[in-house]
Image 1 (cartoon, one colour):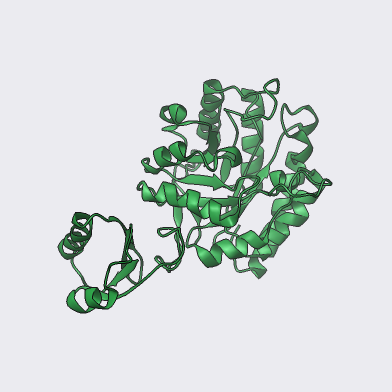
Image 2 (cartoon, helix red, strand yellow):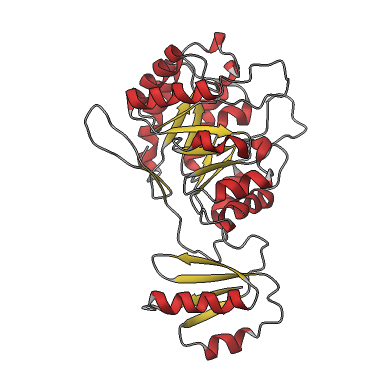
Length: 347
């Protein structure tokens, strides 16, 4: 159930309204938008007499029942698009430039699947920044299907990402595998929850306690509703800085690594106020499909793009077959910048 409050209500009245419901045993989520403030109740709201509660409370404009299991991430509760702001760095020009997801912008996140060496990550970071990428991705901890595959450089990999950020000024995105690693991620700009951890609910609760942007990837065999419910875990714990990521799902198709579900972008933006980006590298596993699908991703209204780029894909320790090299990425970015004008976005 959600109550939409009247305009001009002071903070004290809102706090008292929230406390009243919490004293009655409900959990609450306060959502402050540009047009209105909403208070969402979590719990068994069936006994509540909705008309009575609206008519007898002077600060309530109207109320309605939310039928979806996910409440806080629902557009029913929060009609405005949420904008995620990530602090940027620009060491060359001595100024800070923030990166926005969900405000008509189309930021591109790029970088290797895994951090392999100082030379590799800094070379890639410099190249993608020159081409126009706004954030650097790189795996320090790698969840691999085989225990014999490269597992990442772990803490050393994070330190190399920090060095690359210092050199280029690009905010960094890296994947955490469990909640015990979170202290190591205090200086990471965006914490990624990977597909295999989408329903690691203990981890979701812990990142929900952090006041830091979270990039939440859809699981390889999970529904759209399950993705939204995972986002609900994070938001219900207190963190509303969530970027949803479609990265392909497992189907009966065998010619691609996964099946990239672009219909999910449209549905997610209809159902939720959170920004949505897409990862075509994991979505297909095929380098030649990344650029064409990136153009499609822009066309369906996504809020950003995540692409794997390696300075020497043939020698990559993981996912070289789906990674662009810097020249290919530069060509993609030039094309995306031209097309973004037609789509009303800014790459």
